[in-house]
Image 1: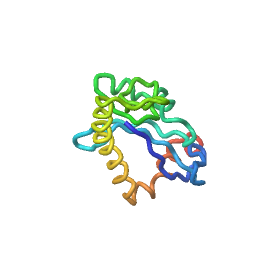
Image 2: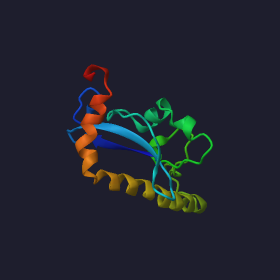
Image 3: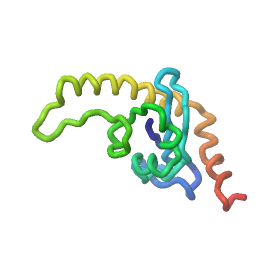
Image 4: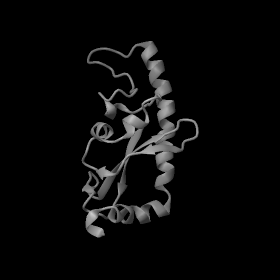
Length: 138
């Protein structure tokens, strides 16, 4: 499970992100073995936090019977996130082994997003898709 920012021309759903572009935050669950997108939430403004979007979407119900790995931005959502180092303490050996496996699985999600961002059609249609779903464009 992860979220990514997609450049978007529709100012009604997109928000100005850190890089100064209007972007839409897209949440998606990617299968760790096949790297295919299993489920996706509705696009939201890029200013909303990943954990908030997870809670507000229908993805928790879709992924109820599965094990879902996420990065540390999903703290407090019930998803499996990496162990964190506490102030003045080291991560235990078993926890570090868990983190290594977590990084291995999560890298597949990041690669799936990176691959999809190279698709020209995704960049060209991002504004059109969200604009066609807004009530004011009908």
